[in-house]
Amino acid sequence: MKIIDGKKVSLLKEAELIKRIKDFPRSPELAILMVGERADSNTYVKQKIKAAERIGIKTRLFTFPTSVTKEEVIQEIEKLNRNKNIDGIILQLPLPAQLTARTIIDHIHPSKDVDGLTTLNQGKLLTGDVAFAPATARGVVSLLKGSNVSLVGKRVVVVGRSLLVGRPAALLLEKEGGTIIQCHSKTRKLAELTKLADILVVAVGKPKFITEKYVKREQVVVDVGITVVEKKGIKRLVGDVDFEKVSKMVKMISPVPGGVGPMTVVSLFENLCDAYERKEIK
Image (cartoon, rainbow, N blue to C red; front, top):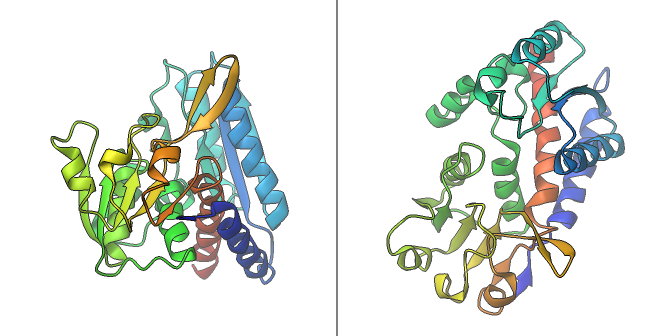
């Protein structure tokens, strides 16, 4: 069994980005909007800002109290849409219950939607037009290719159908030459389908959902899930795959943490640099 090392691949991607932006007239700039004080959101935002600093990308963080209205957030987004020095805008999710993410996200101009979550960019991704893919989905593909896993002609089973990961990942993997079977946690006889896979991608948001009965030898397994669990007062991160059991059976597997997570962050900045270059070409 071989570990698919997301940290290693992401650092190589960061080095590529450092070289890439050296020729830019100015540094790309990302605006991050965060509502409330969720501990997990704070952690993710800090990771993005640190990675940006390593690469040489500028960030601006806009924070709002939990009581903020959608109109106030949208007003800030509209200002950033008009700001020529801002190349990308992301809204850190999840949002408080009174705010509807879709309504707010669709006010981000598609050319600055580096999270790939606006309705327009998701539609373009489906039709094969130039669009921003959600960073995690892009990260899954980059992780496999960066680990020398060929996708051409392979049977790829994706367990998960979210707009953030499952569906866009399936589209991107198909574009790379994979033959896709898309499932979810309620699929009947799921294990029969997952065992057909050469490459199994799991993104259902259920800790340790995939056990040894869902896999076969010589498979490549990518675990996108990440959940904080607590046992005897100790918190730790676990994936959607039961790593201890599954790793004993398969050919390659991505760990949690250290697998897809680092790739999500670097893929966001790849999207940002794409946004910068597309704007400069215009």
